[in-house]
Length: 234
Image: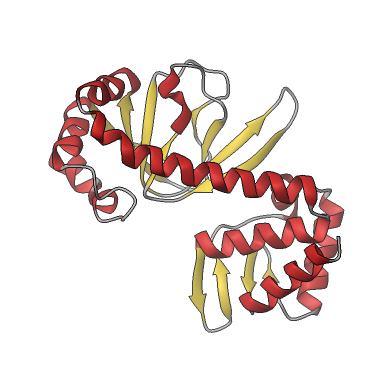
């Protein structure tokens, strides 16, 4: 039990979640448990009955949009993260979740969480605020795909990845999530060949460096300016 409570420290210290009282985390610890997942292991699939909600404590989770024959990475989650946000309506899971690396996830029964909210409605506010943040991110992604050309789409995605998953190094901001050109193409709704060509262009401009699946943004401000130039030319 103690390890479950300790696992929530990252949530309790995060500005987006720190308004939740200790009694909420104690409730979670009493009604759920930590599960350890290996890399490339599914937590749930699109369309399955939404029996559980998840708190990411360690590792990274890929959110996948899936059809019968294809799948695309929509987002990559890192701790602290609560997902999937929308299943409080008791409908099926709207996407699939796959571990990008070995991960620790706290799993809580959805009905137990809903009952807690009914008895403690003030606890809903942090969840609403985080859902609103996720919705804004989704709107930005929709805007980039709907209104941006290939260069602005990929540039915006690289900038977002560097912001969320970036680590400062002597050579710039390392995107700590290993990504292939094919995975980036899926995230931006582009052809792999287009992504490879644009990455080479950015490398030649000195904006980024590539080594296998690792991408380092050499100059984040130069990338921002490059994106704005593309968007202003549309």
